[in-house]
Length: 257
Picture 1 (tube, rainbow, N blue to C red):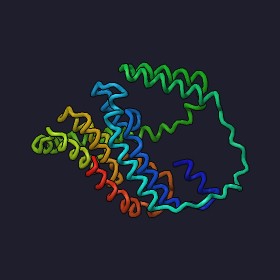
Picture 2 (cartoon, helix red, strand yellow; picture 1 turned 90 degrees about the vertical axis):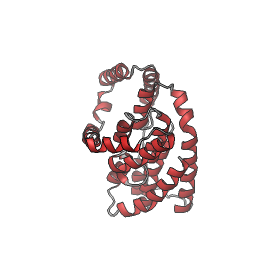
Picture 3 (cartoon, one colour; picture 1 turned 60 degrees about the vertical axis):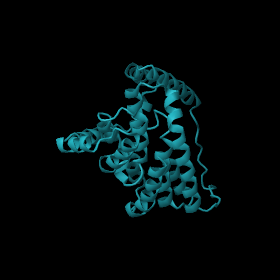
Picture 4 (spheres, rainbow, N blue to C red; picture 1 turned 30 degrees about the horizontal axis):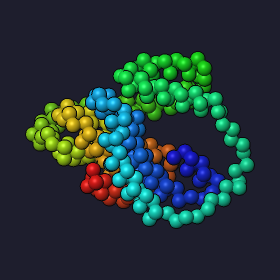
């Protein structure tokens, strides 16, 4: 997203369409791994399955949605070269930081897979604070706080007795119902609070993962990635064009799921 906005300053781009497709692609691509999005991380930790097993289970859905995304992208854009001759500023890469960060990420994944995510996070945070504190201070903690507060508020709303009773009466004991419930509930309260609520009624983590992954499409609130993309773009009049693409995409994604 930031790359697209930076390029738009150097060469004219169809930025609104790019923002829409980037938001959809983030939701589609993040489905594959446990660390791709918060709902996957929650299901991975609560299910107890191995990292590789999780990826293998979500691979068919991710592959199908990426293929659908390719069709949508081909239909929305034409192939045209970008003139980036105005970009004369040097952009040095901190290779040491890249290497250390990649190693630290692999270590954290291994610790999380062994159910030691908390200690792993503490070690990495302390290590980077001692070594490169400026990197830690560049993290948008206000945005993270907004996420936390949003999840708390929406999770509390979803925990209302009336909503719990409705879910219990409908019943999500089958994979199809669990998947559909994840998609529908995500449209109202976002997919992370939705999976937290539904996990109390179904232990079929794969069906829930399919449902809340598909639930990231459709209405913008279905995934925070959608809201972040539109907020960062700074473009006016994004809501209508976004939903004209995202809602049909979500319907097809639900059928595939």
